[in-house]
Length: 281
Image 1 (cartoon, rainbow, N blue to C red):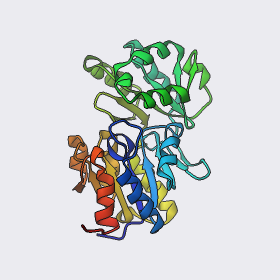
Image 2 (cartoon, rainbow, N blue to C red):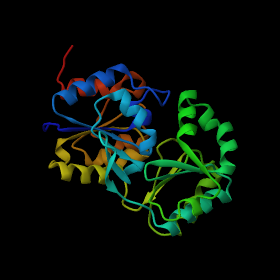
Image 3 (cartoon, helix red, strand yellow):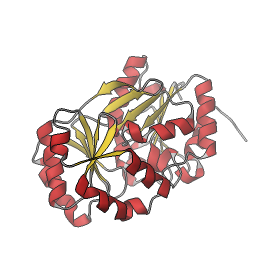
Image 4 (cartoon, rainbow, N blue to C red):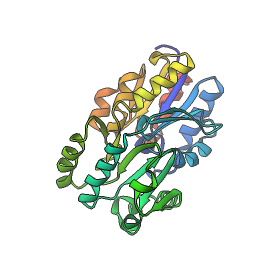
């Protein structure tokens, strides 16, 4: 294996435990030691920067965050945006209209923050997909979310990074996908089983990591990456040492070169200890 200089981790289903909030101790310890030995530590998530900062504080050694499935890259120490891609206004408002037409809850991530329309707030409070998650995650999500009357007006001149529909019923998936594809090229992925996530064409975690690594003077062979979902596929294909979690979906498994234990078992930390820190029992 080539020497690793950067370790990139997805969050939900990968770095985080099943509560979507807590980093297992084995992951924290391994990544902190890897950082002390010179590796750059990167979170690569579908979340916006505002929903990553609590995780960064837990980790204590984060260098960069790839957010919104690759639409942005943020320098953790300063909060400075290093890579910034946005969706065409006609496209993102068209996606929002398609989701509204099917009464689907969605959030819009714009310049590191999360926005929803007022009619969605009550819906979000009772959504099974949120209420089944750890109460701390739901509380944090609602705390950092800005409520507006109409997204089209509130974000008219802003850089929209991503639209995230947490749960799209099976019967609505095809109609929504057809409506979105009719708008033009769009990157669609799923971080969770029933979600649909939309960014500008060409914005994915692999492309964002490639941009970041080019700026840091390294290539894919120096990258160790971990993921479990459909929005991790490009990153897992690109990275020189990529790992699918034991709980990963078929697409992530097919894209990764190796496999590690599940997120609940601290699979990231186990692989980092074995293959980067070269610890043996």
